[in-house]
Image 1 (cartoon, rainbow, N blue to C red):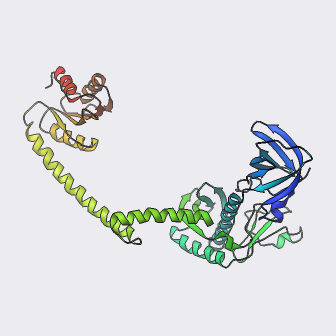
Image 2: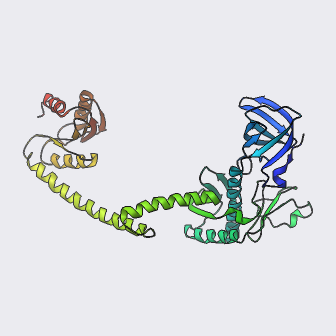
Image 3: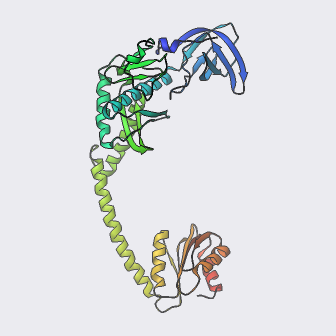
Length: 385
């Protein structure tokens, strides 16, 4: 039996009554059909509606030929008249995203001639894929054009042209479609074939924000959000930026410049610290000058700094072993030697002391949970100290 699609007659219909025409138990619940429904089934990149049907929850909705099938968590009796209620907050959000995407795709098509070849609604952002390049610096122009049209509160027209009228409708398409075709028109912005639900006036979208534009296959992928989603994301960004402004003691619109200054200062400090580290390593190396083996412990070095110290010590002795850490946290281990097999010695160390690591004949790096005394005892047992 054909289901009357109330969502096409009125996209803002939130509650309705209908007769149950079928109810079949399936693995995840009951599949229910009605003589009419306002629940939109998944399709065209738009997720299905959810809500209440009778005294049960509608979990998902799909189309099967002329019927709309509602997956519910409770059964209904065939022949009964039931009330359905759409999860309106979800539906309105999806309509804002869908209609906003149409307007962005229409502007992109007008400016560049590119087609929308992919559309996905995520939990926070929606992505739209186009089949040609769009300069990232043009996003603001696209966004401004779309928002200006949104704030004109243009009427959105959804209709089925006759078979004779269809060829003369200048709708955006990658290929000709066979009649019947549902057309959605945003005056002066976009005309497109679409089976989804739309707002009635562009003002309902509120705003569109384009967040990124990255190369994707032969074209680009744009991340965007509309309406309440866009506002929520921008509010979250503002709160984060407010914290950044406080941390940098900078005005809210000057955090980028403050961050750049901080990065420059940090780079200068890193350069200065690297110079001081080299001086420190050279001073430490003097203590091992002329010795065959150096086993040295140093506090709070990164693995990279530990390796740099070990390389410096290896310049004045045959075998250099450096360790950084504590008995509580464990130690990072580095062995560098031009005279002995550092890899073999390191492998023996982590086997005996626990831990892990790897390297080659000239150098080995790893870590061990052993104590300082246990480490010293191991290297003494190797008769290299």
